[in-house]
Length: 387
Image (cartoon, rainbow, N blue to C red):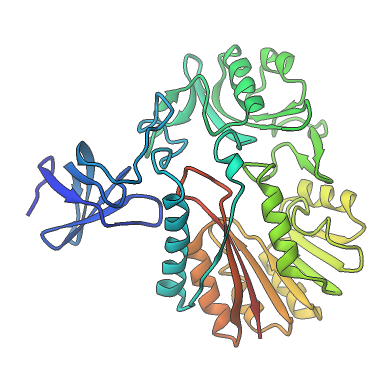
């Protein structure tokens, strides 16, 4: 059996949720970051457990036919992406396959999701990113560590976000800084704990959690983007998500939007639909109220459960964080709603929650995988369930 630091040969046959290549050595599973199906690799064993091992690529003996050149000088070190070397359409096919397999294995749900993408936005699509600085270098964390990889520009970032990174470098900033740009305007939002004058001079819309002044904002596609609150990493690709969700929702007379944030998915629904939304972030909820004359409330998951039970909802829409909606899934399962639309950025927690909901007498009738994060293993999934 392979020991730590031993070099072995591995043929990658499939991909794990999270993006690592998977092969088998002497009956043991071997996870290899940056390995692609069809690769034959020389791999150094970095860590072993009872039933699995993790390795690092030493040499590519035979490359996958889907391996391509990664147009980035720090690819393989920077944690900003891990599939820049994975060619389309194979990348798309594997994303669908990973979602399909997780839904079946973890959720007991059979699905054949639609594939939705904008092939013109596989690069230069990110409008939001969190950078890290130590006063000397500025960039993204390295894979699996807090070591900062210095980057001049990122091929996944929009030109305006790369321009902000260049300007940010002049401030010798330390710590984390979240930057959101308007790809069709001039606004650049900066959110950081330590707001030096040099930063404010370059970014007038910068905010910090400690200050009392109103948070900076801009409006994109009719929805306010508020500094320090969640927005999709690409406002451009968010259009695909909103369009898909609206198609899955249809034209209900009443809709409950859980984890509603700034109203991204419900604020622009037709006005004939009565909307109630709940989210823990008060600043986002207030922004949603300003966008649509609807009852958006600030509240936790306990309030969400209460609102589900008290209302007669034609449709329940939820877009929880990566951890999923475990706390509210049983209440959704027991609800009298006619449809549930579940939006997820993590197919594993989606599968877990769908198992709970479907156990209450629901079935999956439509699903889609949206390429919101091209050249990374991440995807956005949308599911419609009915009684």
